[in-house]
Each structure stands twice: as C-alpha cells, then as structure tokens.
Amino acid sequence: MTTTLGLSLTGRRVVFAGGGAVAARRVGRFLDEGALVTVVAPALGDAMRAHVDAGRVTWVARGIREADVTDAWFVHAATAVASVDAAVAAWCERARVFCVNASDGAHGTARLTAETRSGDVIVAVASDAGVDPRRSARLRDAIGAALRDGTLPLRRRRRAAGRVDLVGGGPGPADLMTIRGRRLLAEADVVVADRLGPIDVLSDLDPDVEIIDVGKAPGHHPVPQEEINALLVAHAKAGKRVVRLKGGDPFVFGRGGEEVAACLAAGIPVEVVPGLTSVVSVPQAAGIPVTHRGTAAGLHVTIGQGPVSPATRAALADATITTVVLMGVAALPKLVAAALGAGAPADRPVAIIERGHTPTQRTTRTTLANAVTDAASAGVSNPAVIVIGDVAAAGLLLPDAAVIAGSGDPSR
Ligand SMILES: C[S@@+](CC[C@H](N)C(=O)[O-])C[C@H]1O[C@@H](n2cnc3c(N)ncnc32)[C@H](O)[C@@H]1O
Image 1: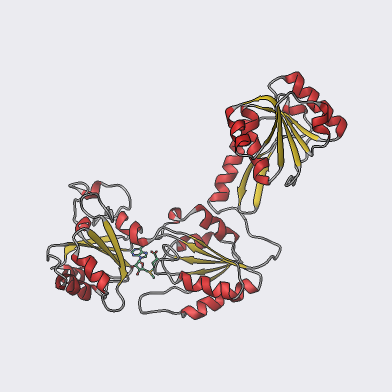
Image 2: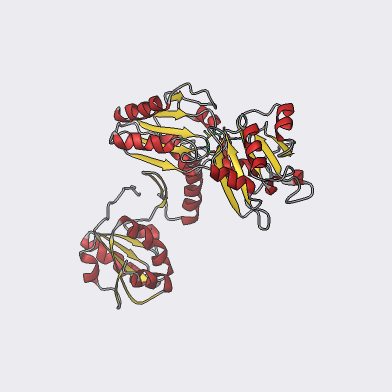
C-alpha cells in the first residue's frame, strides 16, 4: 500500500546513489525544490556531470556507503546494480530514511510520482500496485492537459489575500488565449471583462464567479476607467482573486498600465499576462504579414483618436513601413488626407479587417485613393484594424490569398 504525501525537502539533504541517466532525469525536481543534493557515484553520466559543474549538485566520487544515507532525509538509489540498490534500501530502512529503489520500485519505501503543476496546485499520480511509470505519465499528461485548458475547478475555497491579474485574451477565440490566462480565469472569483476578446470562455466559469462587464466601444465607455480601477482594487481588498480580462494585449492601447498603477498604489499584488495583440493577429487572420522581407521592414502602430502625429505622417510617407491603426474607422478620412499630404502614392494598398478571428470576419481591400468611399459603401464598422502599406496588397503571399487556411474569412 502507498500513501501519497507532499514532502518539503527545501534545504534538506537528499542523497543520490548513482549518477547515471535515470538519476539525472529525476534529480531536477529535487533541485527545483531547493533540496541539498549529494550524488555518490564512482563516475557520472554527462547530464549529472552538468549539474555538478553548474554547482547545483555535490559529487562524492566513490561507491555508496551506509554512512552516506544515515543523515539524509531522502535517498534515491539508481546505481544500475540491483544488489547495490537493494543494500542502499536496506540501510535506509535501518536508518528510517525513505528511499526510492530504482531497480525495484515496488519494494522501495518511497515511489516517485508523475507530477503536473498548475499555478500552486500540484497533481501527483502514483500506482498502489507496483510501478507502471508509463501509465502514470500518460495519466499525468491527460490531467495536465485538462488543467491547462482551464476547465477543472481551480478556484480557491479558502480565502487568501486578494490579487489582480491583467489577462490578455487575444483577438477573440478561446484557443488563442495563453495557457496561463486560462488557468488564472479558472482560479478567478471575479472577472472584469471587456467587450472584445474571448468572451465565450466566460460561460465556462462557475455560476458563482462574479462577471462584471465594463465593455468599451470607441466613444462609448459605460464604465469610466477610474471606476474600473476602483472595482479591481475593491474586489482584491475584499480578498478576491480578480482577473481583468482584456482584448488583445493588456499593454497595447488597453489602459493596462493605468490599472496596474492603481493596484500598486493600493498595495494590491498585480501581474500581467500578455495576449496576442490585434495589431499583428488581426492582419494575420486576413493573410497579411505586418512585416515582409523586401516589402516592409518596419511597423508603426497608432490609433484613430486625436490629431495625426508627425510620427504617423512620417510612417505613412515611408514605403518601407507598415502603418497599423486601431480604433480607426471614423478617422479614415483624416488618415488618408494625412498620408496623401505626406506624399504617399494614391495607389498605396489599404486593408480594413473587421472582427478579425471571428466567424464574421471581413476584409475590405482598397487603396488610399478609394479607401474612404470603399469603406463607406461596404459599411465598415468597429472593431476593425486598418493596415496601410504594401503588405496590404491582395496576393502578396500567393496569387490567390484565399487559399491560406485560417480564419474562414470569405472576403479575403
Ligand atoms: C481599445 S483597443 C484594444 C487593443 C488591444 N489591447 C490589443 O492589443 O489588440 C480596441 C481596438 O482593437 C482592435 N481590435 C481588437 N480586437 C479586434 C478584432 N478581433 N478584430 C478587429 N479589430 C480588433 C480594434 O481596432 C478595436 O477598436
């Protein structure tokens, strides 16, 4: 029979008898934990030698003796000689030190589990009836996959200190979120969500997770930014794990910096999880690379609000720079006038990609000369990303760009 326990070996002596490949493969978890590892072996394999050379493991260059194990907290016997491993296990038994016997796992006093981690949760798989490492590893991997897709109940049931995580949700589809973002969502008590981004994932959350919609559209901010900041701080101060789920990347035109500053000013722990920004991922969904060897060597990113800056005028005038505009539909006439005024040719390609990475994605391809009338006659609306530059030309990558697999955008 086996009982699984979580051992804390930080700062404690762990002895490895044998320094071959098996020992080297297994020593990592002890080192990660901060154990003081000594390997006793007449010779070392390359991998264990690398640990010794890096100063992570102490090497005693001789055969193992009984005195080596008596003051250890834990011993791993993998000398490749079954009788020596058995002797080490017997010495450990006498000294009441737990021991993994790698040549006869079923009869050691300890077994290594197959582990997977998700944040501060560790799931360990062990077998009660002898060892079957492949089965344990496969089961571990299956559990790990479920943990990563954020569908297991990861929320804390005991109140701890509150915190805020700004999670970049990417352009929309749940499978374009990061694994870390999914995990933090699965751990959240409160989610403060935008209108854009992977809102479908919200329906997977526990019914008692509080979801606060602060969705913004250009010119329409139902919840002012100061109020969003205050909401984050108030819920975290009440001991809640708060996820601020944002479209794209939190630090790209998302006011994420202000939210982080508000949390820090209130003494709330806060972290930022990057997301795929629409600056790159939405053009990509339409088959447009924002840089392309021989066509565009640089990228200028701006927004539609406010006057057109000198930097944007310079980028628009430069044939080697791609200009990407967010929140720019209403600003199209102003941008076109600035580009033409800065000397850009009237036939410079323009692409407007609406609702990128969603089933209703649509791309309007045009030129500076026709952009305003084409956008108006197509009824282009937000959310949209505007790409100005030669990379926006239809057929840049392939004569028939529609054959590029990806978003299913029929207008491409
Ligand atoms: C407030 S900004 C946030 C940008 C975001 N932080 C990012 O990194 O993508 C919102 C703008 O991003 C663009 N946007 C975001 N997601 C989009 C999508 N799926 N399709 C088209 N445009 C999108 C639009 O220009 C929209 O008006």
